[in-house]
Amino acid sequence: MSHKYKRIFVIVADSVGIGYEPDADKFFNDGHNDVGSNTIVHISEKMPNGLNIPTMNAWGIHDLDNNIIGTSKVNHPHAYVARSREASNGKDTMTGHWEMMGVHTTQPFQTFTDHGFPKELIDLLEERTGHKCIGNYASSGTEILVKLGEEQKRDNSLIVYTSADSVLQIAAHEETTPVPELYRCCEIAREICMKPEWMVGRIIARPFVGENAHDFKRVTAHRHDLALKPPVKTVMNVMQDNGFMVDCVGKIGDIFDGYGVVKTQKTSSNEDGMDKTIEEAKNFDFTGMCFVNLVEFDSEYGHRRNPIGYGECLEAFDKRLAELEKVLKDDDLVIVTADHGNDPTWYGTDHTREKIPLLMFSKSLKNGRYLDERVTFGDIGATILKNFGLKKPENLLGEPIEELFE
Image (cartoon, one colour):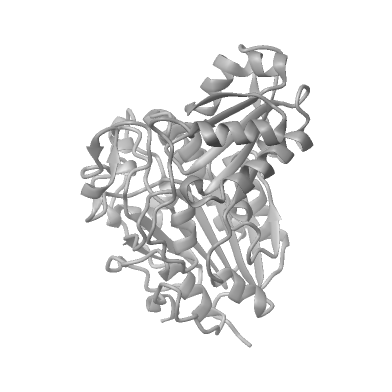
């Protein structure tokens, strides 16, 4: 069977939103709703000379918002661009990624940002793991190591913390609490947090190394996410069931709990993620999808409210996107997108309820242009299924982006 695109690369620039959603008044950050948030525009305003992103500029990102300082209007025949709204009820990692693959989430995942986890949960975790739990509040992962890392290392306790996401994270020093033991404790936490009133989206193991509070460092390569499995078969399952490749780079495999994943590679940074993606484009002759998450926009700069760092990270990504473009084949399609917003100029430290960009590039396209706004992230998955001649299950969201098949 012939396909217009043999390989489709979906690259999620985690949290790079492009303007608040129509229902942003229902989503809050530190007591303020998300109306007015716009991750990429507000970053461009904070950068001394705007954003230097020539590759994304050439692909037409200016058409999505002419307030992105540093970008300009250009003809972009090889790229279609659009914004997409989110149909699901949420603004978190799992909700966004699941919707791309067709899943409609109506009930947001539980968060424990304000008060930490209930005493009953912590008591049960201590009893079943045999470790004392310390922390139990929302924090940056690096800040909590400064405050509690030495105590954990000394006592073989567990640093339990959360964030604005639906997560329970457990940090432990690799020498005091070996990684397999940390993973065992996280598996217990996952089992405990299957109770409806405690059900968080992800349990995350956060191993760290170092001698003291001044040099503790998380070992990203040993991070391990235990996520809920999607409630229904997704686009990825349909692809897998029909013999197509679902090649996952970064935390995609964890977000979907391995469901529908054919191949997976962990990454330690955005740079590592793009190294692996470019390597796949150069040397992996597959038919199917390569699904990539680049998390550092969100984890290192969005949640830490660092717009300059975020902007520099976008500029670094743009350079790697140029490298990827050079090695693409004529029948490759790249979709650069996001899963939610995280405006680093906004209130609080939570994600922001935003639309996402769709930058859709292929050397084979000749009539690229701005397209009307899409109503669900699920159009990404529906487009992939159409390309490979597969029927979309009726319970999944999304309609194909027909212009990509002109």
